[in-house]
Amino acid sequence: MGEWTFIALLFIISLILPAVPIIAGRLLGPRKPNPLKNSTYECGVETVGDTWVQFKVQYYIFALVFLIFDIEVVFLYPWAVAYHQLPLFGVVAGIVFIVTLAEALIYAWRKGALEWV
Amino acid sequence: MIDFLTLTIEAAIKAALMILSLLTGFAYTTLLERRFIARIQQRVGPNRAGPWGLLQPAADGIKVIFKEDIIPNGADKVIFTLAPALTAIPALIILAVVPLGGDVNVFGYRTSLALTSTNVGVLYILAVTSISVYGITLAGWSSANKYAMLGGLRSTAQMISYELAMGLSILAPVMVVGSMSLADIIDAQKNVWLVVYQPIAGLIFIITMYAETNRAPFDLPEAEQELTAGFHTEYSGMKFAAFYMAEYMKMIGVSVIAATLFFGGYRLFGLENLLGGWMGPVILIGKVMLSLLLFVWIRATLPRFRYDRLMDFGWKVLLPIALANAAITAVLVVLDPWWYRLI
Image (cartoon, rainbow over all chains, first blue to last red; front, side, top):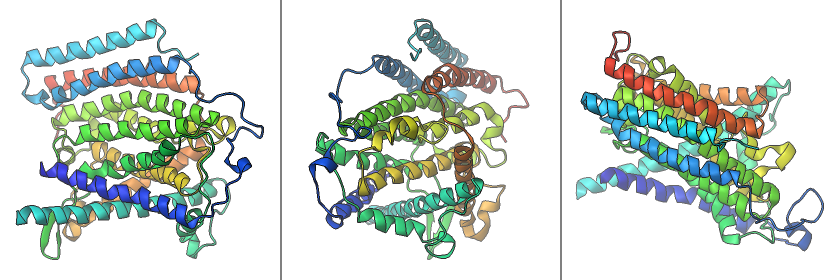
């Protein structure tokens, strides 16, 4: 418990560092807004169309593949820590798991989920 | 109760010192980068503020704090303001679990040079790296600027892709040592650095740490020629400085983690015990400096990746190699041949 209290303490102290300069910058800096200055930058001309549009689907496919793999990688960590005490069955089970991961990667690859066009 | 209070005060002092040293480290890393890159390009670099330009970071800080803070009209104001803080905080707290030295005496009080020694240190590092993706994504989205949006999304896709290879490359040393505590990982490297046992994992970690910090040759999110300034196009004043700060603090953070996982941490063949243990942090700072110089050198040397090649490299080269390395390490550790024995 104690160690996480200290991390929480560090977190609270670390909130100060970005907050104080940003607030100080707001107080000390000039504030002279005008419509031209506040408009969205887009290579010199006025911005065309909406920014928040439907986006390329490939990003979401990568995100989904990432989600699956990231969780499975985290599952491997307890196994790696207990590795020296595991019986042979546990070792083989872990290696089968890694092979399954590799198979999933090959599947996604062949299905074209990893193509960036 | 009294004991807990003492420990809490001790931790508060350590936390404040850690943040202050990161801040100083950040300020002088910017100067180091500008001076070193200037030398590589046959220039002099900033040398006017103070002797050898040593006051340049202070001058930059004072200048940026007096700059106007602009929020563009279309932006989501709350997220636009929170995003810089959300990027800076993970960079500040990532080193909480890393031992920066052994035990030392401070005015007769014996303490260790680590904020805390949790037994899931590696998981903590992975978790905090994941959080740092959010700040950049939200910054890009909330600006309501097309360049920022593209930069933020590119950055997200890049960071999550390289995070996988990073996670798998840390898995191998954890397997060799049999512990997720960074103190144990450093202790296992008393005689031989882990990079000797895990050269492939070490190389993958070093490559992914450039991608995770968005540094050249993986600085796609802020590719000037195509995206202006990427996710921080609309940011100005101190909020821009917060992104800048987060980037350099992340560089220091990943350098410390790379040194800890693969290059012996604060240990260097028993030299860390000199000066009553105070040599340990000095050795660590030396290793981090070398890593930062490599960061700058690579930025000055290598051209930027093309985006599709970057994604291909992460998913089709690094990830399969990291997976294979994990499997091979598992087999090697279980067979334990004579040439693969720690210590």
